[in-house]
Image 1 (cartoon, rainbow, N blue to C red):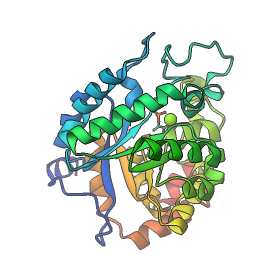
Image 2 (cartoon, helix red, strand yellow):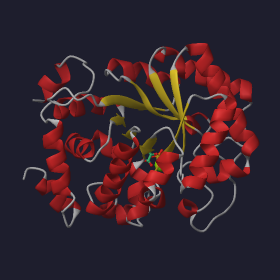
Image 3 (spheres, rainbow, N blue to C red):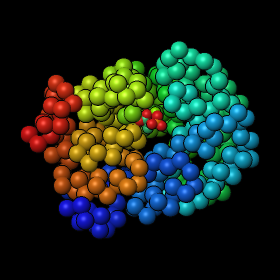
Length: 309
Ligand code: PEP
Ligand code: MG
């Protein structure tokens, strides 16, 4: 089965009934682009821009950023690339943005919260991304990390539009944003679910702490119900709902996510083949039935067992 999966043609993602599910790559540096395309990625669903600047004491200039982003975007001319603006804080140290000592960094100044305070840096980054898009002819979407509610998404969308970005969205990885998903979606062009942080915050279990690693399981019904709320809101508003956390790379969970209303999946490139093969085994109706079933689980383990009926 594995050999069959790996030698299958790199067709676009689709369910057994032909329903398209875009299969995208998570990338962090220009060298990742080639790997993504070799695995048949249809584009990029998460460009973690902060990976280019980790541990720097000084902010990169706008020119430097334009150069870096252009190098990363160039192989994706004509394709979609979703760039996340700098996600600093907690597990992603960017000293030029956040050098505060915090007792609970995962609950502190992170992502869009810092960028709202340092708007000049956010503006520069968005301008650099816009210029890199113009230089490469990519279909660039931008999104903000750690959006908590519609005030955050409204702020980011307005700024993105002012700077000339065409498609501006929000990550949903804080449970509050999932609970008010229709409000966040109303003020965004799309959302992308970050299941790593969404799980960490839903279960109150630090994602980098080994002793609570058993809680960090996106199959947990509480996480699946949050995702379902976002999927329902996406359908109501007719807007795309992606997943770009690790959950997307688990072939069976990918089927569940689509059944809960997710319209695209982004993952580390080596996971694409397994997910592409799994989606082909289910129709949308079947995926929805599986989605409805796993929502009734009482634990992550139970949800895995309910997948097969
Ligand atoms: C996530 O939180 O799921 C996500 C995709 O972002 P990161 O892992 O970079 O925080
Ligand atoms: Mg995250």
